Length: 91
Length: 366
Image (tube, rainbow over all chains, first blue to last red; front, side):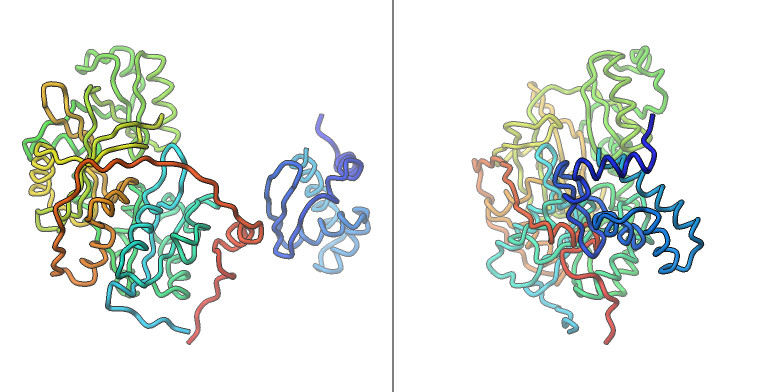
């Protein structure tokens, strides 16, 4: 069964996968464990930087909703989808 | 700073496509750039136009002064034109040399727009391109009175149940519309190969009778009036799994030259080309392909004293150029090798994110 966003995030933190990522201000990312490159858009970069800093998703959603002037529920939902995708990518 | 347009080939900014360096099937672009850079008189710039972030030409500084990603041919000519407008705003391109079969139609379609931007190309007409396509080759060869193996368009996999009905027997070759060829020995092979080719290149797939013999290749530049310029011939000595030469020797074969001459007279081809032929034991020369661009072994033309990419620039600059090719050298061997190119992550990021080895493209304003 696929991980939930919470499960994915806990696993990534436990494994140290987020801390390992090389992420540039352009949104270009490199995973040194798999050698894969990827890119994220503006909101993806905003979220990933905060995750790497150790912030929790609900705090990120609050700030995202202010920064991008969107409903908090939309920000939460987007972050959840993003974290699940990140979990799939960083196996 | 606006780069002044050069009317002299020595100072041209030349953009070249086909700059991948896959070991089993490299594009001609790196060899074209190498040939131009080794010209004793050329002092201009070369720009690599690639389709993939891992195209080696984007990063090989000895070959290209800068590199840019362009959209895949399937995106259409409008996407290509828009991207070339962006690149041209920075680079002020004088000439484009397309080096891949699959992109030729798009370049032909936008030649007028490119001309208006000041970009020259020496390429064929759409009609010429169709006449030498794999499925048009038998008719062209018949007109030129040269031999070619029996060929059939295949759009239905039921053909492989009993190809004898169409005059084919296993083994024979299956070819994709643009690239790739597989020898198929039975129905199972054929179905696998057919599906692979359709998935990669679409329909039609061509079945071609398998001819046993040595492969003779000729490259030259068609002048558009029925003649060819600067022909260089080679025989393959060793091939990759995809049938591409990784070793060859330059030759002088009158039969191959005669066949190319006859096809030129019919086709009146304009631009670089490669003719592939197989000579059977009994001496019969069969034309198997006419490729609408320089081959990946084109650097060999420098070795024989007939630098064809340089010659192409001279023709573009002055159609009445006296090329004065010396007699080519025979018995020159070439052996292809692979080497690693080390690329800093920042440079890779620049291509990955911005599609260029330079800083992000800005629209040029005077």
